[in-house]
Length: 334
Picture 1 (cartoon, rainbow, N blue to C red):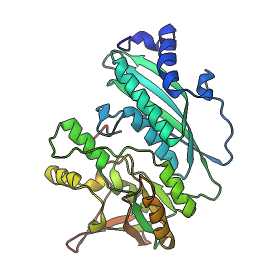
Picture 2 (spheres, helix red, strand yellow):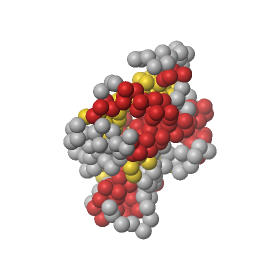
Picture 3 (cartoon, helix red, strand yellow):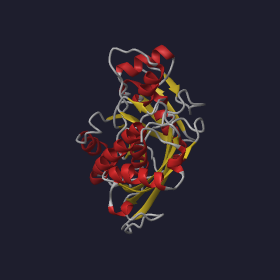
Picture 4 (cartoon, rainbow, N blue to C red):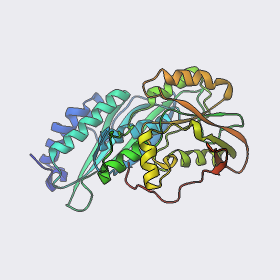
């Protein structure tokens, strides 16, 4: 079996063989191996968080990860942004006939590794195979369930005047890594996607301050779009500091060359946090102790109530509006 054939999606013996020799091999856990049409799971103690997403990234493999790692990390992070502890994931594969089994196995292995790091179980799934040209190699759909502790109330509408805005690290890394890979740009140093599960970082933050106001992972549309969503939902004005904005020199250089703004580029392993000013220092210290928050820094604050506006204080002493992105400068980045 070197390539996926249309018969692998028929539901017959080839489908069963693919499930047992590939998916069960990497995703093995008691709930999955029961083999039911739905996973039977123990009831969590707290409130439930539920999310779903689809991944259509091109190319399938990129510096720092592949579509499989991205699917798990993206689902884990979506749950984590509500303050939930991720527990279970389902995963469905839409595969183009002719895809190499070796490629599929690399993707599945990366998913298993990411799930192990995030301490989540992939408990259910589905496989469909379509004719050549019906999809671009491989699409993955996921759903995730997490548990939210009783005292946690994270919401886009909770930002308050005086709150501090923290970024967990450099912005635009994923979007620029995909662009460089897709366009085969030659750089002196390789850009790597920041794709990573952030649940341990969020839990570390909640341990020192259960009253975090807002969390966002700035994926499509980047930090600018995420902050505009927060400003609109909370009806506040957000001020950013250009001289404190964490952007790698390589990302900034390519952005200047191509006329892009790193604030609008996607991330897949960073978060933005709106936190009470009196708790900012202790939260920042906790973030810096986590491997995925070592470069955390304050990038702005909530200044006043308004209809929702984001602006940045520039290095030269002026101000400019940071508006919502219109259109996507780089489609299919996740």
